[in-house]
Length: 249
Image: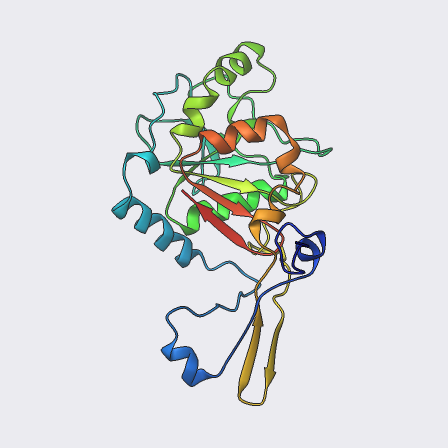
């Protein structure tokens, strides 16, 4: 039997086909489930609900389980400094592609908090905004929380990478763009694709966006070896694609 034109294995489906929902306001109120029109900016209150629902209803598999990390440093998203992490603080981790962008770095020779550079890559700036918006005050980013000029510290932290990602409250995955200046679509001034919506008389036609099952594996992020480790080790993943935001726990 030949494949249907809407078979998800079909290359045509992967590139253009989308389910389209048609309803009026009265029928929408009676539907068990109704598609949501995505705005250009991410609604971080929705992310907070996802995290709260996961924490309240899910078991050990979704909880941070990493061993304490010796020498762990994190970004204080409110003070915009890099500082030594206190035990059991809630932090998010960032998984992204550096690309050809010269990474901002912080040298932390002491236990004092060190201000972040002003020229932060866009993806890191957007990740800080996300953390502040969902009440997670700390963020771990490899290029800033590991002294890139200290070979001993690099080796020590790489050897504890599994505990860093397992210990994160969630991991922000930038599955979009080719470098660290791509940003997180829908955050700050980083734009995401516009959802096709049309009003015909009293009816509204809403098309879904490109399924994450295709968008994520085809991203540059997914082609990197270390990002597979980061995705597997993380208990919760907040994945940004060009079209939408995807939460997995």
